[in-house]
Image (cartoon, rainbow, N blue to C red):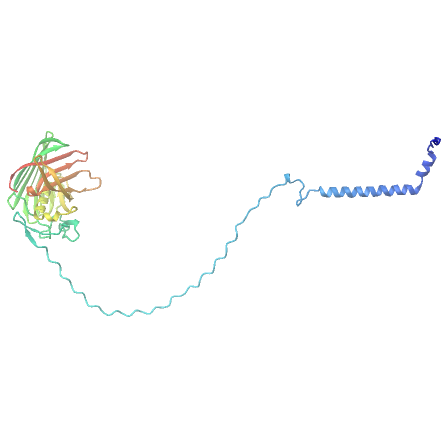
Length: 368
């Protein structure tokens, strides 16, 4: 059986007022509020300290400036102290060497023997190295400053060729022109040399005359005729001067030659000793005058060639005039043949513009 419903008690406002007015209750509430405030203050202080930005523990590293590190090289090790310099000890003075006996002079080797050539002349017999400037053991080809072989010099001997008139076919750049002529006359005391040639329709004539000596030719007059113009130079051996066509003069050295006598001088040297020119490189030096000046000429033996004369091949020694100065583009060559008594079998001159004038032997009148 259910209990009977009790009627609800309604709060009495007077009782609430009494509890509120109770001082002990109020004190407890006040302490609770104070404690709550203190805790709140501490919580705020702790939270504020942690969120305070500082240089050592940043919370947001994305906005932290980067620091660059610079590595310095390690310090150099100290240099070791220099070793002490030892002073050289004084060396004892060497004793004077005993006097040596004076060396005895060794006698000079004898001159090479003389042999007779098939032509009846005598010539010096030399080794395969030849003579002249290309061989170290040979005697000088000429006396110093003279440009001609010294009389009696070892290996150098002049033998003049006999008188002859020689005909040459003339070519200009391979095109044949009228024949040229070399007329050589000598009587053992004096000589006369004439050279005539034609280039196209122009005639050129050269003439040299003078005396003959043991060392070779001694020119006295040299003349050039080109077209209708004639010029000459005179050699005054007594005064030691050469007078040119212009009136100027130059000192005349012993053994000097003119422009064409130099070739007959070379012929006589080869005739006097062909073995002197057995090895390429032998060089002869001449002082050569024309109608304008006097200058040195170096003629070098460059080897043997076969020259086609139109009627057969002729073996000849090939000589070339070396450059007289830098950029000298004129070239003069001569081939001397033993079968012609060492007279020229061919002469060729190449001009600076490339024009070549050739004289090739065709026949001769007179002895060899």
